[in-house]
Image (cartoon, rainbow over all chains, first blue to last red; front, side, top):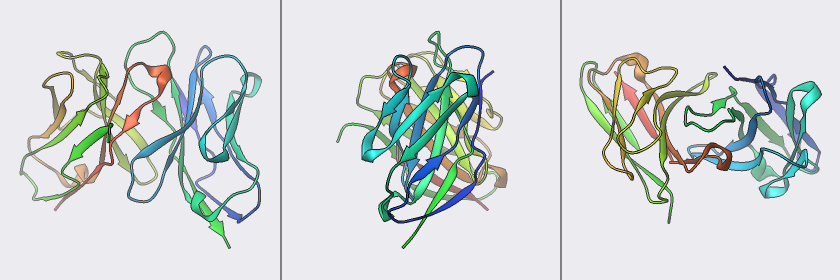
Length: 115
Length: 112
């Protein structure tokens, strides 16, 4: 079974500073990987996804993530954060081979933006 | 707006009461899911439905039942609510896993 670890429960970053959120996964083959963002009181919005090809993927809101097979990682980055980026971020892994047995989510990283 | 619609948005139940959470999507997706979100636990899959007429248990199905009424609708029922079921419930749908999921805005349920 697949699993996801987000090592940082909370991260505080100053507005304008760069950001990296860590995600490590466990899966026997190359997985589908996703990052979602959840603003307070809202549902989850897809930021970006990886399933093949270029290991650096671009997403919405200026985010990018890099798939590193050797490290089983899919870290999320942004060069300069804005106050509106304060939210909960979830990494998720999905199994290849079809089926609909669900994505497995990490426990989330809460991002705080300091002025 | 196209997407996933959940009702109600908020609900307070007494222990032992029953209720059904409703979910509908208008994107013609085959697969639908129910997750619960608890602080520090992330999202955990309760039940899913790969297609109309099929349902399967996820990671935390105890205390819940589901119905895939048609391709659009997937409901979650609590037969006898318990305080441990206090949570935020999300419905999601997808065409296939590599497309990612579209989530509803959630139902915040409190069981007292």
